[in-house]
Amino acid sequence: MTKKKKSPTDNWKQVRKRAVAVLPKEVVKLIGDVQKSDTRPRSRLITVLHRLQAIEGHLGPEELQAVALLLGVPAAKVTGVATFYHFFRTVPRGRFMVSVCMGTACYVRGAEEVRGRVAEELGIADGQTTSDGLFSLQDTRCVGTCGLAPVVMVNDDVHGNVTPSQVPAILELYRARVATPDRAAPDRPSASA
Ligand code: FES
Image 1: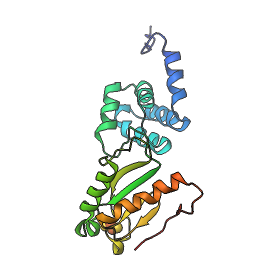
Image 2 (image 1 turned 135 degrees about the vertical axis):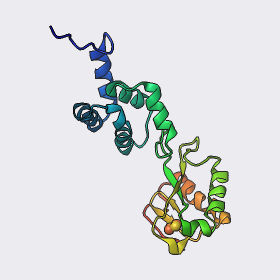
Image 3 (image 1 turned 45 degrees about the vertical axis):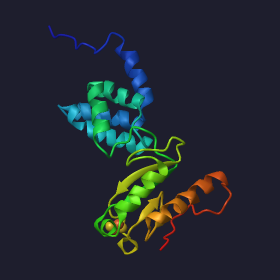
């Protein structure tokens, strides 16, 4: 007689239902596909987290718990992976993502000093978000405008030839946009040289 497969918990159906409700349908489907096709679903954890972040923007604690349950991976491991890799975000990103290019051209033209000034002005480090939810800071690789090095992007806006002393004024542009939303601050990319 074949033994019936044991559920992870007595109330597994309800637990699963709750986990499914927390995650985007696409991620639930991906986890299902992984479990059907892969004998080691744990090895696909990073793929699942990437997809989840692409949809949600960050990896929240509830979502991580749901991934752990559905994938059958210990919650501590899922959280460990999400917090270990710099490309995963466990807090929501700010309204304005400040990306300082650390590619070679920008680096040799002072990107590190520019990044330092941005971090100082915002009071956050790489990968963090300000407490008012306005700004997030991240390093980025070459954004393809090396002629304007050093380059800082704020969302899609490109700011070129940035010096540390220009950083406060650049950030102020975006604070002003929030304070007076009607103001004609650039919402679309603008390359300032
Ligand atoms: S290295 Fe910064 S834009 Fe290319």
